[in-house]
Image (cartoon, rainbow, N blue to C red; front, top):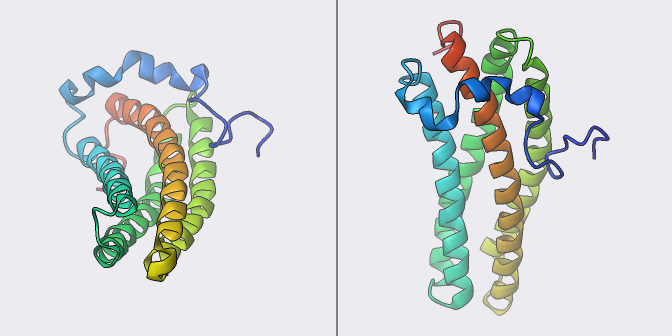
Length: 190
């Protein structure tokens, strides 16, 4: 855990100093901003896709634990959705770290340190994704006699990941979107 209080697992949001642009560009006005269409809209849709995948996997795990979803069908759905989720999130973070964040970080010195926090989040999430994959594989491979244990362990790991990823996505949105709305996306790779 980082001693600056900004560790993903501990923080409840970005420090106020990093929310300066959010005050000028509040979330409820984003869609009406001329710089929203295109990159910002696409980027937020990707975030929504990750949230929807987590919700679908959680619902499936709950149905499997309740006996309403056959273990084989649960395993097939988890394999497909979980694989797309992990690959998509890794790719999304790589593009952000390599292409977007370095450019966005230079746009406004007042929020530049926030991108270091988001980068640290990505590294922390990598560890949680590895635990998610391990738990998912455990549920998928569990014999019928221990399926409920495997599905339960996966559901618990999924809940942990969901909380952490949501914290990260909210913070990322509240830092990145106002920067793009203020400065535009012309300097960013499309």
